[in-house]
Length: 320
Ligand code: FES
Image 1 (cartoon, rainbow, N blue to C red):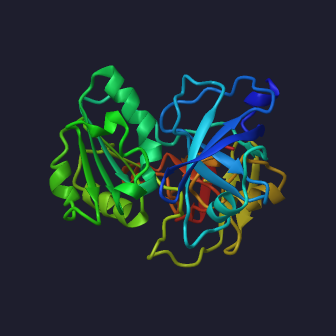
Image 2: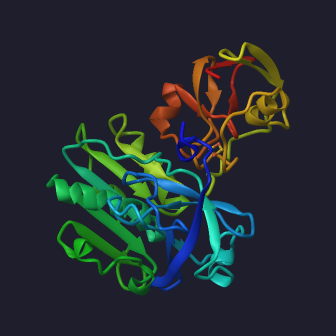
């Protein structure tokens, strides 16, 4: 397998350009140092970007997938930064080297008779390439784009977002949008994609409990907070393909425990937001603590993120 196509490949990149896309939002143009082609990606994909300060964060690709020379990611300046946003806004400059994993897509478009997008703030960057793709196909779509003010809303003046399909709500000038009423009752087959602040996504997940299965797809870059989660208990994991059984202690993740036993599993964020460690469940029931799977995907109990999720039963059998 070519080096670049291995799941754990790291691609060396140079910051070719930086510009303000909106107030507090910097758009980075990333290229290979030698200008050669970048890996393919599809709308909805993100990259795990490793910054020179060794912090790794997930950012949606918001450029055109057909452009194989340049990737764009937009980064919001956050007052409470976990190390990525502050570094980019304060220290990162054009010409510096960064690296990224292969594009990964937990937010892929599916064919639908109607596609509904809900973007809060910087969440627009995840859905914009998806909107471009759906609009180009001629399928019906609509977008609710919510933000602090027009000046803080990236791409809000892009021609595609100025049509009748788009409801822009800027908190400093517009009344609050009732999302439940705006979305309405989704018909079977309608798909709702949402990316934005945790509170908005939590509210949509609550709403979606009454929707047909598979309607809601959310993309989160900050780990979800689980109010009802207690400290983990001890359980066993059978790694079926490796023929090994391990005991996962209460203070350890499944991923860490398997790694200590010599079973390497690709991983990146270690906080249940990137999807790199997604693993198929053969038997047992997962206690999901990730920020990727939709409520119905959790119930389906087919896969789990083993960096954060645990087991509800004494034994879990995984396809590893
Ligand atoms: Fe990112 Fe597990 S390593 S979800």
